[in-house]
Length: 273
Ligand SMILES: [Zn+2]
Image (cartoon, rainbow, N blue to C red):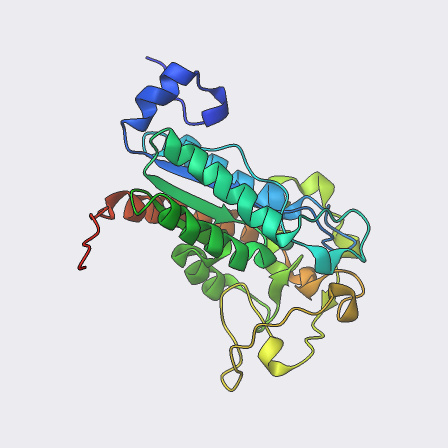
């Protein structure tokens, strides 16, 4: 017997009508195209995020419907680097919201936006919240950064060689993952270390860690004001072996989260007027 399909784009509409009844989680990868140093292609966020989602969906196809990725996101602060493609913030929110509302219209009740680009984060949170509000609570929608999956954070803490701030952008983490996926496109002879954070409260790390005395400041200056190569962190510490461990952790972390979302009750609202 053929394996169940998992990619929405490869299903016929009668198949989608049936698949909706299985209450699988609709997983939507979201990323962007932007500079990732001299050693990585601009598709880094797209490749990493879509591969994590695709490999997870392929392995756990009874639990996930993989939605075609949203490959363009919010990156105006990267526009000093050639090749960056960016979408206006309001357009981006509305675009993601329209995709989620389309899925809801067809009967999907659980939607997970899986993000691969840091600066998409606040916009996806808004899109996820609005999906719940605009479907009047009939649909659950959440967003997660794939590097913030619990399992990834655990593994990163165990195997990293860089100090805090070394895993941020085109860094030990992303470069390792790219090496695990398409090593032929990574030029490690050009990998650099750039750790010029403007101040202690702007030290950000993909693990969520911050210096103990730092405040949780949110501020994003233009990228070219603090990085000359596009790297933020330390790409020289990247290895394919680490990338394979990050990838395995991301797949494990994503299926755990999908199951959590799948088990989350969709409770009716209570109007206390
Ligand atoms: Zn990136």
